Image (cartoon, rainbow, N blue to C red; front, side, top):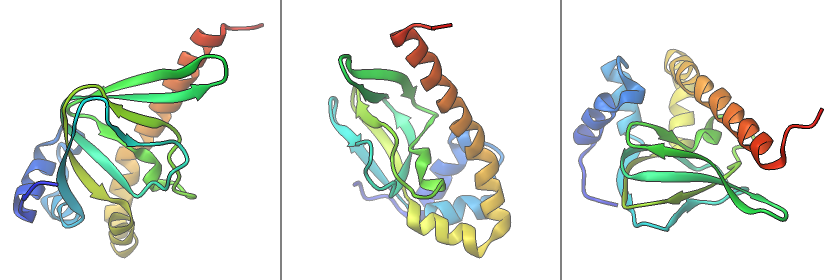
Length: 158
């Protein structure tokens, strides 16, 4: 992790496209739980089944979301880029990751501690509702992308 102040993190969070228009006090809450981090190319950020202890705001680079398929190996279901969010499982019990995430190239993130943020959501329900409104469409979009990729790999059957 790099040496970045909480104020710097809150500013970076506020400027991240995913959090466009987010109230400054909410950016500060996220910043309290965050740290800057970087991952070298071909490094896994996390693996399927692990606890969803954080999520990532992608600032630079690309990350492949992969699932393992018997007889097919790893299948890339989506590639994420700067400006996107990685690791949405932090929001839904039992807080387990559903995919592998691999940096395709040098990737810089703001990494947010999920337990810290869940606690802040519990303390401030307006904040929790805002997080749900922002993350739920991402969950649905990722589920849809996975479905389409699986149809492509295994072929649609009638």
